[in-house]
Length: 460
Image (cartoon, rainbow, N blue to C red; front, side, top):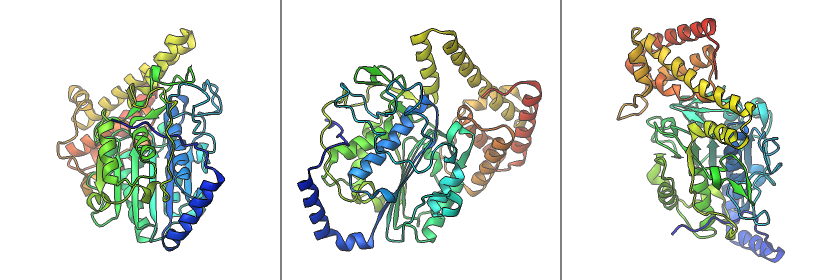
């Protein structure tokens, strides 16, 4: 049976805290001096319908702190427009789980330290933080050394070969991300690095790209061609009887944190956590990449909190196991539909209509680009939108270079948006059709977006 997650707000008595400090001092002096634990936590989206991403990351921050992380060794990037949004029915608070009563509810926004917010949440700044480049980042960065363990947790939208940042307008390609991880290791910035990634098609970020000699272990919410899922949605998104009207968490993220909380101070290996999270995340396929075998016997405490502090049970949860989940790509539509049903006003109807039109516009744009690459065959262009990735999908150097090039060109010429991220798969399939030759795809992108800008308003 699944154990209920544990509260992140247990009050520790002064005597317990003293005993813990003595215990740490007695057995951990050498280890603490020789090894530090660092974390980078990122919620890469904005908008109230993306409530879950910021709740996930604030929850992760609270969990790491409770498990012994030093606050100055955690760097957070969160747009921070949700907790105090006018749309938030419990203003100034975020909840990652549903709760029966307000007295029992755990507000994960309380104490959530945010280092970079708003327009500071960008791909370049994320890379700078990972690289320890304080000048470019303009603030707090990783200061890890060669003997340290680093945990990276990124939660947002994504697509084949890319992860997105607020509004989806700026993206980071998997090739750049992996090269950053390589550069970090060459600079002596970690002994081992664990990357938990919650995005759609998140498996595509690492498949075939992580070098076998790089001490990195990546766990993704989904494989290379499926969505990740939001959870505690709809009627489950209720705190103390108040409907939040937006999914409270993401299925993969909720599950790994629930598992860590349930384990408390008990020893748990990364293999045990993977098996548990894989079983519970039943809407997508949780995948492992990198040096999997060499990490599996490592304790979760090596990355998720050095002390393994026991967290107390949260009896006030209205449900311990996520019951209602929604495909991440459909959450905005679901949010607007529910908002319309609850209010019935013209503004809500207009917002819903615009979202439907935006989704249709994305399909038309993708088909237009594809048709141009495929000799002007409109039917083939439309067909490609629903095509699957090659069965043995894995990045090769030519495919990664082609895709990185066309993803960049699409951003410059057409403009990425949250709704358009699904087109990254179309761009990959077109690179595949041209055997890694980016030129025909680049010409098609240029022509399609020029035609649309002249003859039709681009709806995103």
